[in-house]
Structure formats: C-alpha cells, structure tokens
Image (cartoon, rainbow over all chains, first blue to last red; front, side, top):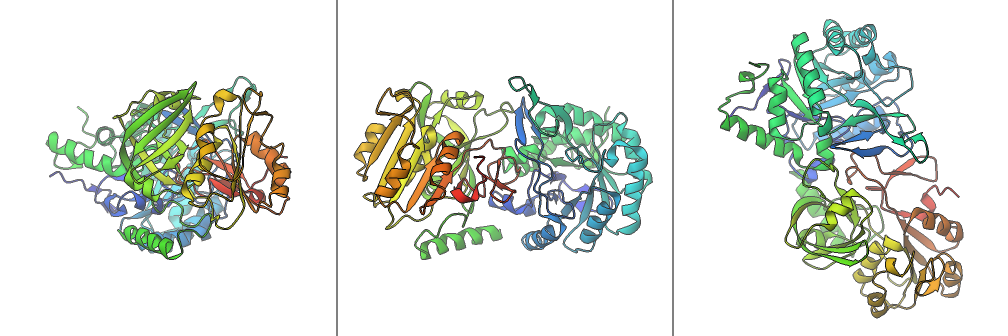
Length: 302
Length: 286
C-alpha cells in the first residue's frame, strides 16, 4: 500500500490531509463522525485575543458549487481556546494547529506567544488574510512589507514552526509568498477565500453587511490550484494547498501542482466525514496509479 | 475513540434521569452521518410533501425539537445539505414534512421511495419535560413539524391543547389526523378564512392561556408569527419555548452561520444552542 506520509521537514504527518481553520470547529465536533487520529493534522478555528461575537446575520449564502461567508471570526478568544485545546488534545495524538489572528501586529504576537507555550499545540498558522474583518484597515496579506514585518515579528519571538496563510485577493501572490519566506516562514498555506459580492435586487443592497464575503467550496478549486502552482514555483519552503478540495483526486492534483500537504475546507461542513473519505481515496488512487509516496509526484508536472 | 464512551455515558445518564432534564443538555451527542433509504415521499397536495426515511438509529435517538440535515443533490450543486425538523418517528423510520420553496426542496420532492440520501442527525436540542403541566402548542404553517412530534412522543395528551394556523386551507395539513389524537382542545385558523376560523393563531392565545391555566407553551412558525406571539405572551407567567428555523451551513455548530440575536446583544446558533430556545432568551425585534 502507498505511503501517505507528508514530510514538511519540520514535521512529519501520517497523511497529507488537514481540515482547515473555520471549517472544522475545534475538532471535537467531528469526533462524533470519525477518529481524529485518522487525520494528518487539523487546524482549529481562528483565534484573536478576546472573544468575538462575529458579524450580524446573514453570514452565509450558497452559490453555484460553493458558498459565500461573512462570519467575522466568531470565537472564544485565546483564553477560551486554551481550555478547549487542552481538552481536545487529551483525546487525540494528531497534531493540532492554531490559526492565529490579530487586529494589529502586537495582537498577532500576543496570540502566537500564548499558543507557542502550549505543548499540546504542534504548529502555528498565521492568518494574515482575515478577509472579513475590517478593523485595522487592510490586512497584512495585501502588502509585501506588512507581510514581512508581521511574519518576522512572530518568527523572532516564537519557537514553534510557523505556517503563513495567504489571501488570494492580491495582484501578485508569489511576491507576498517570497516576503513571508524571507521573513522566516516555515511553510505557506494557500489560499484563503476569494472575495465575492452578492446583491439583493429587491432591496438594491448587498446581501452581506460587510459588503464583500469570502467564496469557498468546489467552485474555487481551479483558481486555488493555479495559485498553489504559482506559489510552489516561487518559494523553497513547503506549500500547503487548499481551495475547494472534495476528493482524493483533488488532493493529488494539488500535490502535483507542488503542495506538500493539503487542507480540506467547506466539504467538512457539507459532509462531516469527508476528510477521512478523501484520505481513503488518496490511498486507493495512489495504489491504482502505482505512486509509492507523495514525493514521487509532488511538483512533477510534465 | 473516547467519544464512544461519552455517547454511552450520555445515554446512560438519560435513562437514569428519566430521559428528560430540559433543553440544551446533550446536544448532538447522538449525531451521525448515515446513508438512508427513502420509504415514502408523498405529495400532500400543492407544494407540500411528507417524506419517510428509514433509520432505526436516528428514529430511536431523536426527540421532539431535533432536526436532520438531508442531502438534496448528490453533487456539488447545490452544495449544502438542508435542515428539516423531525415531524414524527417510530422505531424504524422518521418523517419530515416540507414545502417546496427553492432549489433544494424541489430536488428533494423529486426523490422516490427506494432512493437513498445522506442524512446527518439527530441534531440540535429538544423541548423540555411536560409531565403534569398544562401545555399549549402554537403552530404556524410548517411550524407544526416539531409540535406534531411532541404530540406523538408524550403518552399523556389530555393536558395538551393546540393552536394551528396556516395561510389557507391548502396550507393546513394534518388537521383531520390531529383531531383524532385525543388532546384537550384544538383551534384551527386560516389567514384567508378558507377553512376554520379566519385569522392568526396569535389572536386568542392570551385568553386561552389565562382561561385554561396554561403553564407551558411550545411554539414554532414563521418569524413574523413568533415576533407577534412573543409580544403577546412573553410577559405572562407561562414558561415559553420557541423552535426557530434558520438558513444553515452545516447543522452541527461548525460554520456559525445560523445565528439569531439573543436578549443580551450577542448571538446564538440555531443549530447547536437551539433550535429550541426559551422565548425570553431571544432578542425579538418588537
């Protein structure tokens, strides 16, 4: 049987499938559907220092093969999440990744330091995209210098490996990825949701109070795959690909485009046991295609 | 695997506690994802359907107020499962009563007996213990769903009364069946007067509560009806519970989409904090 190990250098995952932040709650909700030990790793819902109520409804709209969301990173804050992490870590050995958010460089650092100290946490993922949150003006992901500054600040102060999650809503994502790499990022994850707009012609108003909302789901897969290929071609650190993945075949496409591992997103909400189905499909496909290990096809586009 | 023990503990606790303690106790402890067979998908006239689905597990572990997420397309479009309240359940099958209102319910209405669909459930919390209390059920349109399950779930029916209204006679299903159940009083309404009394369920509710010494009310219906109802009965001495409907992404607390405003300026998730809420805990607009 094929070896599914995803070796990112700083960590070895038993398989390349990682449920993404915001689509997997705190993991424990999914333990009703399968054993969390079956996953490569999982990312907890993004966290700021303080608890957040989130955006006013409506927060979600289904679109063709996808959905727009404007949740507003609702959550219990760093203190609340710490307790949850302790509880969840008791039930699984699968690496836990914390998605670190912040309204300022200082807040990013504060949150990162709190979870850097927790032995239950394997990795940090810096959410410099935050496409739904207006406070603090534009997000760091939209600017090379701001990306470099905040990644450097975190890397200078924390010990755990740092994944930097980029936004696709920029003109040149490869250059942002290079800035993150130069600032010391250990890996890049791409991509966060694509900004979209939904309008109500009866009310002549946008559907969402924040105007734009983030598009995810199978609808964005080709867009995400293109970005993964661009970023993987531009940097020398591992890339974790995501965007609309819903099958084992999708996973292997992302690996072929250069990803070391992948994150599953919206599909986890639609089909709770999707991530373990996808892992099974990856193994079957690799056996069928006589691929022994992921490195054999990673970035090997002919 | 620790979760399995947790489920067992909850189950055991529920038996020990005489099944019920109140709302919000063991939400979603029983949820599962299952491929289920459709037993029947019967058109009740117009856009209304009653679908019976085979699942001993969901049927036996569900309670009045619980809901399920049903796959409608079998493809990526439409992508999301749709939430449906449980209308009734026996030891093998459960039923959902739905109206075709959009693409998802339209696709569901085309399914036939023998077809299969993925189901996640049972989900959400449930209505509290009613024993020994004078209970009034207040249903508007499809809001009969969880209240019908209440009527079928509790063996003691002589202390239960029902107010049930709909837009017109075409929208008022199950009236003949409900008359036979043997509850205390039933009052039917249609907005247009095409059958039974013309008017809204909210018209006589206050008098009925006061005259019949009602202790407890369960209501479900369109937001506008619940708003009007809250205005009339929220300050009475009755204990009032409402079951809410919402646009949902996942149904089990992950996406944080289905929120309603609570009475302290925050949000509650209809899927896991509800769908059953104390009426006083909701931030009604009026």
